[in-house]
Image (cartoon, rainbow, N blue to C red; front, side):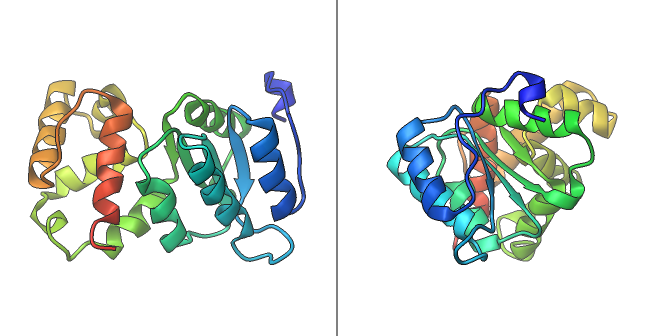
Length: 198
């Protein structure tokens, strides 16, 4: 499928050790990684991705999983470098959606399944500072963390882009994080909050 959309496949591997070697030797523009790989069939793929990003900070990684591995997901999302994606396999509905996610991550952006964001947020739901956010600010924060632009958020929530900008400004102020116009930095700030107090 990726080749049909003009991606060049450098390697397709079947185990954690093969993935580690391929990421180190081939230096791909983006890695699409299944969480569960042999030999352990647990979280081998995600651990390999984390190790690869420690060795090559900013390596764009799109993780595919059956469910949310919260500890590793927070670690992956909170390191603050390069493109990151985390999609649940049974919620990737069509090729265009998947290809868009791969391209966004390769370009340094994010592609987050809303269910992943929801689970990570719910873990901190009663903690401050998220407890100080309004319901609308929480909605905006989830969409920002998914990698949505202000225009996309405005369209989804049926508000103006100016209103979205005001909400994001309030969110960063309440989370004591610097405001930036850079989309990736916005997302990283939200994800840094998710990792707060881990």
